[in-house]
Image (cartoon, rainbow, N blue to C red; front, side, top):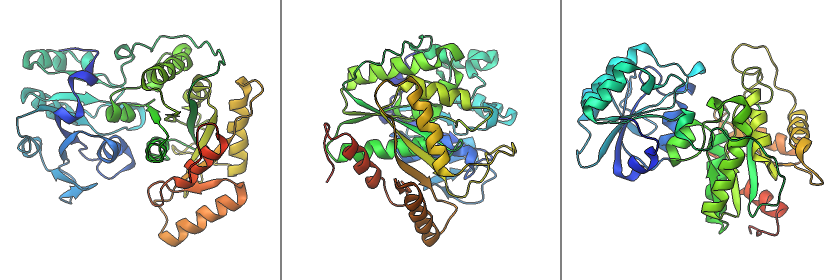
Amino acid sequence: MQCRNFAQLLKPEATELIILTEGFTATRHAKTAEGVIRYGSWDLKSLIDSEYSENTAYGVHVAKSLAEALNKFSNTKNKALLLGIAPVGGKLPESWLEIIKEAIKNSCHIISGLHDFLEEKEELKLLAEQNQVYLWDLRNPNNYPASRENHICELKERSATVISMVGSDCSVGKMCSALEIKKSLNESGLKSSFVATGQTGIAITGSGIPLDRIIGDFMAGSLEKEIEYNIETQKPDFVIVEGQGSLLHPAYSSVTLALIHGSNPDALILCHKADLEEINGNYGIKIPDLKELIKLYEDTANLIKKGKKIKILGISINTSALDSEEARNYIERVESKTGLAATDPIRYGVNKITKSISSNFKEKAIIE
């Protein structure tokens, strides 16, 4: 069965979920699984990974087979299998096909954020129709009404302040930072919304756009329209936009540029991984000094602004590769060198960054 309104049909609170991470559990490629576990509201039952040696990962039970995971279902809700990886190129592992087919036969809807679309595989499509389940390709632009919008760039006043995440590289914590900042602003009494621009964010929230799969001419326009819709329907004080890629990355910089122009931000937050010295992928491209990177992003954002200086207001740092003392020392050095608020959102929270946001937009409110 095919459908374009999956978020209404497969509401997380009404759907029991198992996540396939076969061979990838606890690796950087399992960020879709980790993001949904940390921030999603699905009724999560189990991960599936026959190769993983532990019984739990990310605090979730790890089943050694699909059959074991299926036993976790209560049969009182919808059932779904999420493909929990985001590998380079977004390819579907061939070894997963049999697991997916067996899940469909057991009445599981299938949710995938890969570039290989499930609904384009005739065998899976036919099997899904026979078993009356949905194949939800999170990255399929045809599932999103704003995917063919031209960028107008009207530069008009908006009722909400838009803050976009940018990064030194891919997979440095841009989505995590955005969601933590949104949460912190809401807890302070400032209404904040989140615009997902990637498959994991869409899986968590049920809305957004798959920016890296939209036709190049429409990337910026699609995001512009998505933000307009978000402001119109949610009436937030702040819109927090999930980042994608990096201006430094030779493969994904076009997505990052489209995100900056399409979001037309009022401010930026820089995301970085503390132990990162080169762009991932054996490109041999060094990460520049953070002050240089800040200037690059600010100059880029200000190319389309008129009479309004756009600044980076804080630095979100993934310090997972450092011990506690090393992490604190690293953050202190970054703050001293850049003069900006810096923090690790998981270890220390983002209150410093939300205070910086609030103090720069006093017309909204000031966080004490």
